Amino acid sequence: MTPIFGPELGQAVYQVPEGEKVVRYWAAMASDAPLGKPDPTEIDEVIWLNPEAAKKKLTLKDDQKLVDFFLDFGTHTTPLVLLRHAKAVRREDWDGDDGDRPLDVTGQRQAKRLLPLYLPYDIKEIHTSDAMRCLETVQPFARALKIKTVTSKDLSEYGYALDKELSLIYVQELFESNVSAIICSHNPVIPKLVKKILGKKNFKQLDEKLSPGDAWVLHHRDGEIVAVDWIEAPAS
Image 1 (cartoon, rainbow, N blue to C red):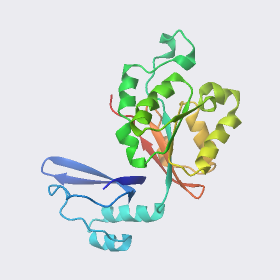
Image 2 (image 1 turned 30 degrees about the horizontal axis):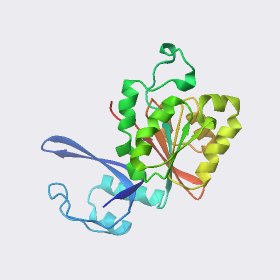
Image 3 (image 1 turned 135 degrees about the vertical axis):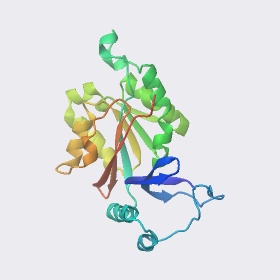
């Protein structure tokens, strides 16, 4: 079965003979029918239940809370991923135009490892700043999914400094289009755009600092953001 991720619900921690086991849960939709049999060392049985019936099957309160979170978030959300470009060559080490500054070796490795992190979100569009470091971040992902990258200076540091309103309009229109999308931009730009989109709303995940390759995922439905996830950059 191929899941399409919605918001992350939380995690459960268990003690097993090998030590501590952490299991993370997401709200998800099945994109196709299950095929084959589950790994018997991990799963005893696969059954489909509505949320209330599932809660009655669960014996641990922490597991029951995961179902409550699912009910709070609801279904049929759309993700908008706001991705900070991977690690780039330092400004002080680059003599050319800042827009041409590329990824360093670590950033190149990060870019190649983004696919597994965002594949479950069923991304349909990729939008990026025209800065080289942003283009190089999404290129491996775009090639793997055969998605044409949309490039815009409105998502760049230069474009944002030139006209903040154009940058906001660009992101707002993509948000309202209700399509699963990734925007690759810059640390000075992304937090300001998110703050504008959220208005007075706040989510604790936004307290996480965006390091190179990190992202926030805004899960929205009917024009309202219902959850925000923070995704750490892939190990390099």
